[in-house]
Length: 121
Length: 366
Image: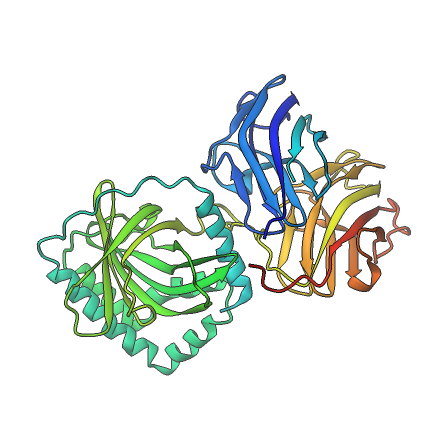
């Protein structure tokens, strides 16, 4: 029973992390509502958004439904689909009343991303 | 069926569900003759009856109920070495079959957030692939409306792929092979045509397989720690969020001024979940990681914070014990490590902030 929803509208890359074999980060999200089954964005295994400094990833229609909380984690993956080899960049979570806005997520590896979101209800 | 196994399988089911499955190809027509395959399955059923009715078989199959995925995997991997199956496999290899793998697997049905059914098994090279290394696999189908968590049926298969190449989508449709014993059979196919035949004894016989889509994962080709880590949590009475973790003072691990932090959380002594699920987050003195990790629990949550130092022997830099009685709804509470490291030369110190979000949640939510 999901009582709340939030739309993640975009991810902006302010700086990429230093790791990885290609230019930029191969970014994907894992979204988990209420500790349940995670959703991978983009959905296809081994797919990702290649992001370099200044790039904006406009998420077409990423609506996350939740009852208590939804956790969004941002990852950089290398060539293999194996999640054991993915690099964790950062995470943020939303609760009822999170409102709309944007958050800046950084790490010591140089990754610097801004996630924008709209609280629906 | 052990809860830990259900959670491990649910993570594969979640991964499978998150993949965009290709559209189902048209079912191929039934091969003209499957007499040899039918004979193999009849002999396999006899071998299974002999094993499962033996004292050793009874004991081992009863133990499966208490195994996690790694243990079930080791168990199925041991099946080709049982004398009765050694004999069976040797005979199958002598038949000059067109197929490349013979599989023995245990079927199960379970529900955790979503319903799924499948088989954990071992694939053995036959035909032109005899002598090839065996591979353990997990074949999963998603199903609506399952209410049970049981293991017990056994499935045999003959496949065109070699053991190592079984991974991928298969579609199946029920066929009648005219067995006298209680067995249901299906042919499996891909866009390239027929990929194999499988029969199931025991559970699910009355339903057969009708039409199914499944995905076969090969287990254990991903390095030293091959499994998908647990993420999905079973719903419990209460829900908290570990909002943040603060590095008051990092551990001196001899590698710069940062710690590579991850933690393991465990509710009520049940499954241990790592966070981040893979990898770590680097922290320096005075920094706070807004980790936002939600946790379902009944009475308590244990959190152990590690500094990943590249060896198998990662350093513990904080241990936390959270009880429901220490929390009140909507309020953030700071916890200190139950183990005090202030006497250490590096005086490592981490704290966590925890907020209770929901209490006495109804067990079953529609």
